Structure formats: structure tokens, C-alpha cells
Length: 427
Ligand code: EPZ
Image 1 (cartoon, rainbow, N blue to C red):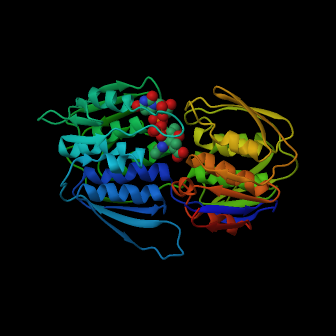
Image 2: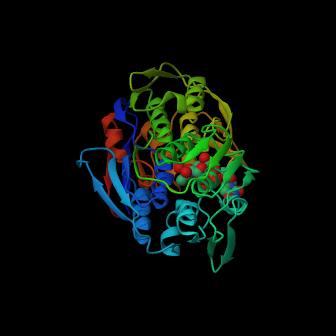
Image 3: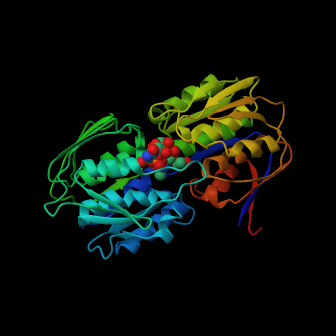
């Protein structure tokens, strides 16, 4: 398994391109199931999860072709053609590796009238049930069966009628599955307390480009008027606001600066406000954001929340940054029950963090020291890289496959900022 070696203590400075958003791409890809015409997605990030999803789509008989990108380019163009679906089953051996596979349930149900998907296991950050996905699809008229570790959704012979569902908890994935099922329903569907993340807006924009009829885009009340068919489209994936925020923390913890090319200020307001409160300078510049530091980092009290609140996916990265603040910060993780896997590893690097349930107290320290650390989940891994960039000496982050799921060509982007990093194989 690969690991990354980081020589810390260097002030970072440079400009990096922000890649296409992983959490948008993973819901745009299954939209190919909703039409028998070609769907071309541009600005797809080169990530392990995207490769995994491509393989899953091939499993259904969907042809996928990659075009238009040179090795040195960031991002790829993929055309998916679901002319004929030869299987409506997402098997365990694929789903267990990538829980986002559950996002084929809604579109497969809409296209084929039935879908069978292995139940995703939990993951490092929590048990992550899918009960809201299933309740939403039932509300739209699907019959749901659970057997032998699989979930099977079946639509009436007359087609999915559509319906109304009010989410008791804001769920990004369940909103996405419900939307992709509702667009081809025979009637109207109303989703209350729907997720409002920019990735949901990106999904709605693609569906509308394919001919869907959706009202309330960007709000928590979505109304979908089902249509009989959708056509193909060419669509550019939005930039990754979490990747951009991660590199902002990386630059800031070293007392450096970075220009994030392609970052969208209006989709990152909570992150921008939090960084500014911590004493980081964030300015909108032509085509992106500029992040710099001017003086000590200040401690914060912050809770994660659904969009437009501070994103849970930024919590670990912010925590690493706050390890160097002058004072104690209080972080509360309200979305997932076990998203502090990075804490023991950060403490091994000299941080002083105490956790109790969903709250973490981050006591700022003068210095961090490089160490051998273990990545456990995607965002925890990035927080270790961020800490390693500021630590004295060398940090080795093992199990790099966690990072490769969500950060396109990480070491190249860090090198563009002047970091001394090296990926080494096998350990
Ligand atoms: C998406 O996961 C993202 N993943 C996550 O990003 C992100 O952390 C999360 O949304 C929250 O923003 C993708 O988009 C591929 P949820 P998702 O359904 O859809 C509970 C990353 O690091 N819940 O919004 O799985 C759930 O347990 C990843 O890029 C139910 O109880 O998240 C959690 O507590 C990690 N029942 C809360 O809702 C359900 O049926 C929010 O989960 C579904 C969710």
C-alpha cells in the first residue's frame, strides 16, 4: 500500500486548479441510467471512487469511454451510453468497496421499474444507514424488499407514480436517490426538508439539462413533475468545494498562501467565514479564491451542519489547522457519530485534542512533530497531511488509498504549492 512522505515546516505558496467535485460526480454518473442517449460528463476528477463507479456502470451493460484528456491534465471527460441495460443488480463485491453505489437505486428503479442493490456496509465514520433512501422511494410508490443483504425496489407495472416525502433528517444521498427516481415518475413528487448542498443543485441542473422538470432548485422544498423520457446531455461537473477548503487549510497552517483556481466563493461561504474567523485572509479573485495568512491563528467554537452550515466534510481539516491556533477551540460534529478518527493520530504528532462524544476541544500547541500515522477515512487522512505540512520533521501517512478516493493527484498539487512530498509504494 502506498504512503506519502512529507517534510514539514515549509511555507507553502502557489496556485492550484480545483478539480471536479467527487460528491457531485458520484451522483451525476448514475444519471446515465435515466436515458438511452449518450451522457457526457466533463471535469470528472481522476479518483478511485470515480473509477469504481465506472466499473459499476459497466456492470449494468453501460458503455463508458474516456476522452479528451492528456496525462498532464487534471480531470477527464467520460461519455456513458445506457442504450441497453443488461443487469439491474449492483453486487456486494462492488458496493462494499464504495457505499455511494447506493445512488444507482433510484435511477435504476426509474429506468427499469426495479433495482437490486447490495446493502452498503457502514464505514469508518459511522453506520450510515439508508433508511431514508428507502422511505423516500416508498413514498414515491416503490415497493421495497430487504433480503440476504440486498435491497430490492420495485415500481408498479404502471410506473412509479411519484408522491410526497418529508425528510426527518437532511440526507444528501437520500435526496439524490429520490430526485433521480422522481424525474421519470408518471406524476408529481414533492420533497420537503431536502438537502440543499451545491452538489444537489449540480444534480438538478444536469437533470434539467436532460429534460427533467424540477422546481425549487437550491431550496429545501423540491417539486418534480415526472416526464416520460429524458435525453442525453453534455455537462461539466462543479468544482470541489471540499477539496478547495482542504488546500486552504494546508496553505494557512504553514503561514503561506494559495490561489485556488476554479473555486466558487458562493458555494464556500461557511468555510470562508470560518477561516476568516480563525484569522485566515480569504479573498475572491478572478476565477477563484486567494487564501493567505497574516499573523497568528485564532481559536474557534464551531459546529458542523447541513448546507449552508459548516460542512462535516471540512471538520477534520479545520481541526488540523486549529491545532496551531493560539488558544482552545471547540468543535461539535453534528452529522456523523464517529468522525474523530483523526484525533488519536493528530495527538501522536504533538497535538492536544480531547474528545467527548460529538465534541472535540482542540488546545492550540506551539509545534507539531512529524510521525508515522495511519489514514483511516478520506477526510481524516487529509487532516494528517495538513498537520504534516506544518510539523517539524518528516510525516509518513500510511494507507494512502483513503486519500486517493477524494483528492485528485494530491502530491502534484501540494508540490505546485512548494511542499516537499513524495509518494512511495509498498509497506
Ligand atoms: C454525503 O454522504 C457525502 N458523500 C458525504 O461525504 C458527506 O459527509 C455527507 O453527504 C453529508 O454532507 C457523497 O456525497 C458521496 P447523508 P451521505 O445521507 O449522503 C444519516 C466525504 O467525505 N442518514 O447526508 O451518505 C447519516 O447517518 C463523504 O466526501 C440516515 O440516518 O450523507 C448521517 O448521520 C463522507 N439515514 C446524516 O443522515 C439515511 O438513510 C447525513 O447523512 C441516510 C443518512
